[in-house]
Length: 110
Length: 116
Image (tube, rainbow over all chains, first blue to last red; front, side):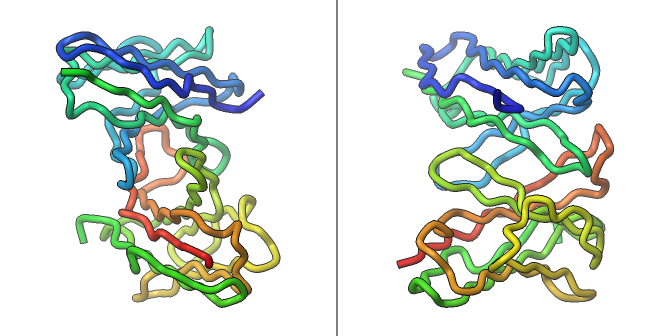
């Protein structure tokens, strides 16, 4: 079992819809979780991080963390074509290194 | 500076040659992390530094890879005797803390290494 698992997609949603990206992790002791967006050929760009159970909202983005279920999600409201990218879920491992999932490719259709 | 600066953007080497990549962290950040992205999305941690000291080298291949962060110089990642499998994008990230839950890592634009 991989430490961080994501559906690789592609996930296709129409413009204006809610995109839901999911991530599960295996180490129950993990404390902090990060969502990065990566456009093709570019570097990962931090969207949000979360370390408390519950929801955290920032503009059109909401991160959700459920430590009991070992589950992290990212919701994107009012999806735009410019949101089309690969979304990487990562957790902070031992000594602070990031452990990434394989990424979910999101396509927002106009 | 305000961004993690990586050079060069693209590096082409023949198999067996040496490759050296550079990274300048965000000013004030004392932690530097190196990651390798092979294929499209698989990130692999290589090594991290706290200032000029190795912090975690558990991901570093022992034989051909080395890295340094010297005072007043960009950090460097060097690969000796490159192999085709070393072709990847190498990302550097920096942060003000390593293990703090609320301290994210900020990534540079990466160096695309192509081994021919």
